[in-house]
Image (cartoon, rainbow, N blue to C red):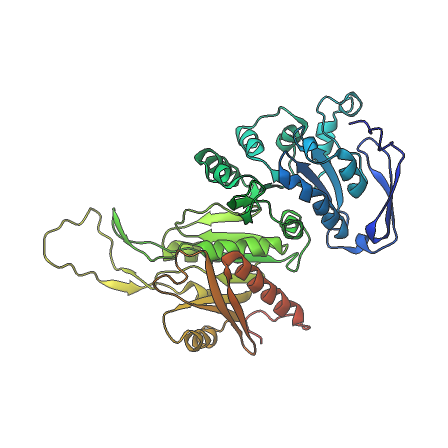
Length: 449
């Protein structure tokens, strides 16, 4: 895209936080003169490609650019034609310090295959706002404009921040498109819920720039409080077979474990998620291992354990299983049926006692004496930390929110009722703080306070 009459190619912009830019180069790259400390931010040296599509939420995107720049990132904005109806390219050029791109047929840029150059340049791609139309085009693999084309051409992590009317968001077509994108490993950031520009209220608001700037860290390697750590997480229920059509299980939805996995990834960790049978999409950037029984989960955990720094057990693993599963469906032949049950191997205790022991975090789902029972479990299983919550009818299971008491050997924290993702971020922050506070490298094979 050629510089417009209000933004000559050699224009100088003086922005907040003591940063000056002079734009130049085939990508609109700028010579940066940092007077402030943005270059020391957690995203220093990272390249973020921000796609902006048509929607009223586009007015938030210049602030998102500023938040990313504050963290030290370089930001290249690519706009769709509809986005230009809401915010001008000059605005984005001013806050990013780079020439905005929008035209797939720009002769100057495409002479050097500019869309491929952009796709290779980015360390991460975020579309914010992502309209219903763009989500549909991305899901179907269209390449009819610059932004859609580079999304197909990039190998960088990709996330979208949906923004639309709440009825558009709840429409079956949109839900199907979002589910398809999530299944392909594309991050879905939001949407939030609240008042909308149309005067209605509901889910569909683009998340706020500060929130999105933090979440972009999940797409980038090497940043965050758990950067360089390998985190192994279990989630969901297990199923113990009675016969080919029946099994014993529990009410765990897996939502808390998946939220913890997302929070750990946002904190910069490499995350392996061992999950029982749940109907949840895998969070972006996470390796998922699917299992069914307690024995399957134990085998998967022990296989993934080498090199693990942190193990977090959120799974509701069956304590007992049938001694012998019937080969054929059990017929209804009597008024009662007795099942002989035997103990399963305790996955959490096994990891905590392992010779190559990582930092071990357990969960305690209790119906009574929550803190007392959790502290007993902490000591008995030799854990580093445990997160306890009360469960029961309308509590924790199948709910979107929760509350936690987090116990260490010499620490106690309460995380007030909030969404499970908010709680997961709080828990991960406590884990990271405890790891950082250990001045002496942790000795494998022992739980330290």
